[in-house]
Amino acid sequence: MLPGRFPPVIMLHHVSDDAALDGHKPYSISHGSFTRLLDVLEDGQFTTSGFEDMNIPLHKRVIITFDDCAKHLWDFAIPELQRRNMKAVFYMPTACLGGTNEWDMPFGKPRIPLMNEADIKHLSDMGMEIGSHSHNHVRLGELRRSEVVQNLQQSKAILEGITGKKIISIAYPFGSIPGEKDNILKETGYAYGLSIYSAFENRYCIRRFIYHDGDDAARLKAKLSLRYKIMRAVNDKLLQLKSATPKK
Image (cartoon, rainbow, N blue to C red; front, side, top):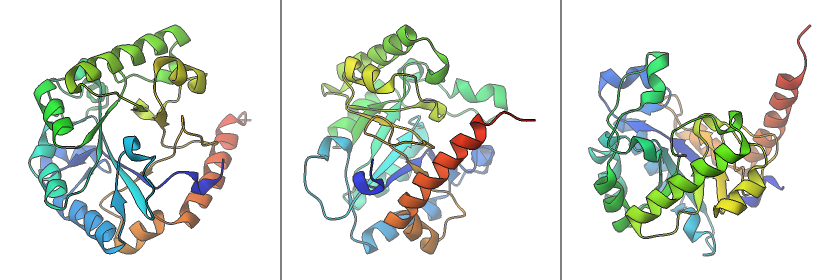
């Protein structure tokens, strides 16, 4: 699959100036960092879209994604997107609707309230796209095939019941890609799957890049470039080969 086949996809989690969330860095960025991101996209004349818009021809497209759907995104990130008429895709682990990030607790991470059904409905109604983050926020690559299918079907059904819209994409929790991903996603009705690191990319395993507080405007512009996508295609393959090599 050619590196330029898909637009740049940005992975975000938390946007907050609350020092209590510092334990989630680099997955928690400041308001200033988020503003810088949107400024760079505007200055570069990128159009923010979702996966449901992929059939619409756009010269410079970028997809902003938020994993986990933290409640605090309503405080700054979502209003800022609305102010600029920008779109993002929000990935919700459906077993955690109205709950907290229980999967982070074993790692000593700060507890964070997550969005509830009304929040997800509101996001969808305002034009944001909703996607699945599995049902239980588990490592899908460690589950049996039948468990993955059940997990994805359950999440999709819940989100479609809330939004009244088709759910067409999933962001794999922890970047853990299930075996037989292509067949499983086709079987369960998903058109796109999002990874983080992936040796090979197709529509069911699209690479994303992490944007964090350490990325200044120049580095962000580099991450948005085709050159960076080509570099990632090579580096991710090397990373997989290295991890698969038995240690002596």
